[in-house]
Length: 332
Image (cartoon, rainbow, N blue to C red):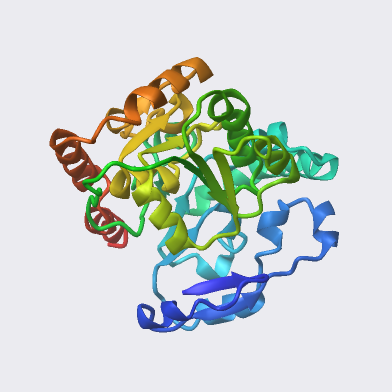
């Protein structure tokens, strides 16, 4: 396992599942903002990494387009190279630009999107491209060969839904990300504030705008900077996981977490479009429809047939063991 570090502590639990874990300092100098390559790519380059890779002849899995700086290095020409695509990166950055409040970050996302669109052609150097969703697979296949759908890996082994009724509705996500902040603000202003049911919004670094919007309402709680086990508990204890998004890219891991461990999942169309998860969620797009559905579901126990449907679809289409076999097949 080769990791670029830039602020987080070393993940010691990786030592138990990897033969060796290597860390490389990510070069975060602002001078790279004027480079012709995307900032997220050029800052993840390392000759030390190359030296380590060249010690053996193993296949290489590049985890995301942002890790592909060395993909076209001639020294790796004979190696099997697989790129895991989490989404269509330039489209993702265009959407980040649309919802960003900071002028500097807005300009950054716009420029980065253009650079990523040009840089994406490096995928021609990969032996295989592992796309995360059916829609991404179809789009990438129009530009590149050897594209295969391998859905998201996740920490869930089986469906585990509590029998008792939940006591609140939950929205969760990294609130520092513009699209999640936008979704949370939409829920506070258009949905949660309009009905007197307990609501919790949980995630990393809630914005001042979000905290201000929620503060007048005693039934809306914002929980900032809580850890993953605490998020997991909230998912299990919520009656409804309310998860809209305004960016239909990839597959959201938070939705998988809610489907494996939570009760009802209320989403909008962009959250599940072309993911294979449409039949496991209640889909409502307007604020009015969401309000009415929350009022209906809040008193409704989740039934056995819903559990069985999730177990069938998730075990067949979103099984880690099935998907890792697909990945191994690409190595031969």
